[in-house]
Length: 279
Image 1: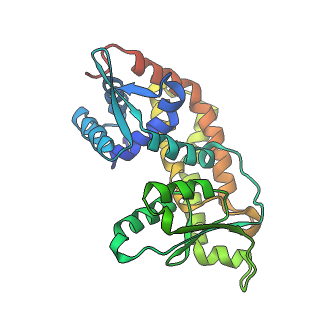
Image 2: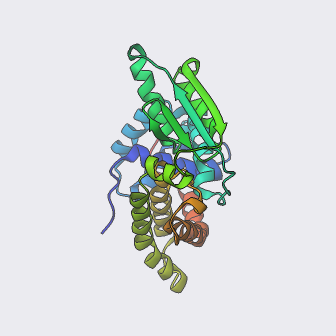
């Protein structure tokens, strides 16, 4: 049974971040190609157009005319988000430097909407709350946090630090206080349970069509991308032994590589087809 796409706009962002930005010469995709690609996931043309319109209003995509075609590319805001998330999805694990990144703010009720936007941006970057107005991260994402404050017009009320933690808890206990470690571990195990048998089948048989490989690749990325909101790259030395996140990362990279060539072929087929689903 095909898996339904619950939120087409979020899935389209996955498509742009994983394939369009990497494989399209100018980072754009014409609407007909996008419709054809999303049809592989059971998303109708009207649903695609509605999602693209919504993403444009929200500042993630922008339209561009290329002759008679309407094309869409990610905005500078969208590119920044992709650049922030990509290393945490595709990049190698970076050893912890022993320092914590800290953000504090004093934003009153008169600017509560901006405060909530800032909180959402920080959560998307993998930061967690130490107290209601203090957020921390073990990863070196101060520049991204600063940009989040700038984009939400709260930079004047924010202070950023890079420091060592001196107690009274231990670093491991600090992680356990700010992140739900058992929940994160469970999510990793569910990811492994879903994709390990599928990766094994690909190793043994490699009989997926190009279209099926693209569908599988994007679901793989979409599901793994969710971990950037759960796990900011928690230091392995502060986590329980046999941490499933390590196995999940290895599985993701191996399976992604196995699907790459076929999925790229289907992407280029859709992107270049003259009748890719309409203008």
